[in-house]
Length: 219
Image 1 (cartoon, one colour):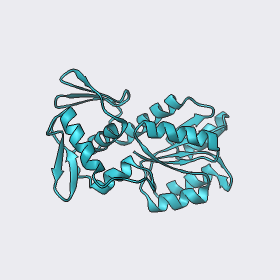
Image 2: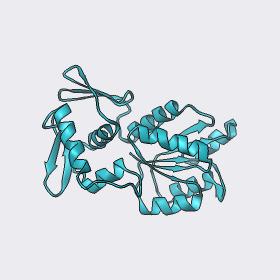
Image 3: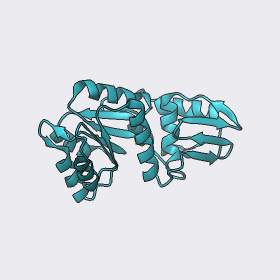
Image 4: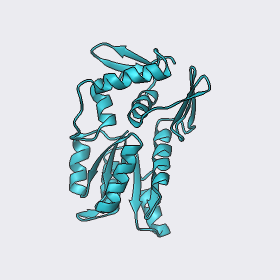
């Protein structure tokens, strides 16, 4: 997924960014609400991680404004505000989840996965696709019952296609899912990942429309 992290604590922000990247997601990190506004204006994100107390205002106002404009991007609030009234305010403003600092980074990863599955319309983390048995929560795949090891990037690419069965995704769209803004990307990076996935999961697992993009195929 492409994730926007809005967090002004540099130590926590770096830890969260590294955790998200290790999970195979691309992450853009900003520390102010005005920067967040610029980011969402120019990029389509799959999820926002939003602190509530920022140098130029409260995250609640930013969230309410996004929802008022019809933005349905999933939002997980990350905050030190731990009163029940704070949680109620955040959820009523349109947040999908609310995580109180300090939190375990593995729990954050699990909540990101849970929210993304709900938005994809399938909260069940277990998926059967041809010869593949996929556990989204464990980020694991078996082929004909045998475990298959994927790198974080390979998993992220496969998950992006799996979430949109039948939909053609361009090379640029897939690069956006895998890499943060400003990251240097080799021209053949997506092709290399696709080739490796086909070797590991089956030649037909990803279909190519030459010059247009890729879609999930049979496994």
